[in-house]
Image (tube, rainbow, N blue to C red):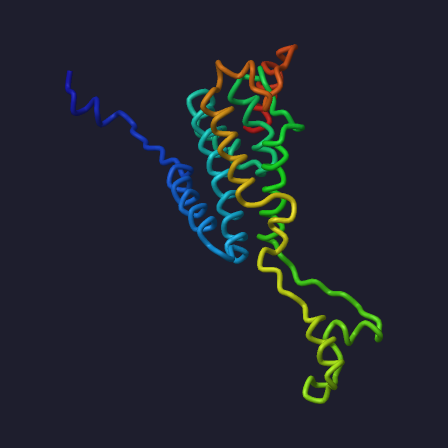
Length: 224
């Protein structure tokens, strides 16, 4: 047998997982955030990095699990779904329908919130608000320059100076550290235990009726 001709007919491929380098960057981000005495300006990049890692982890896991079963086209279709949908399907896909994610568990609640916050920041828009004349001065829209204000007016103006929110509301529901913790729990309780050691994990729900097989084949048809 001619080994050179055999090698020539073979196809080779390499898969590069994005979640690995992003995980290292995320650890660096946590160290910076915790060491900063005034970390408000780091909230947005930290949250965005958490969301980037979450999507990379879901993409890597779904692609790896489905590639050998359904091929590259279907695997690519899975990872082209929206991020909220990928979060919902990753558990049933990787457990062949035996489990689904527990939507009442704190890990899911934080990750779902993380996605919403990421979308809010990524698609930030200017805000328009009409004000009555009596509120215009408090909102710094009065035409009178500060130079001509008396002491009482100046004090009032300074007190009502708008404070710019460097966090853009990203830490209103959960802090970046809480989002990061949810990512770590997701890794520890699901990805590291999947598929055979999930029976005692509260983050997933066991599906009694095993309805995945027909649903799976139908879903693959839709994706194709």
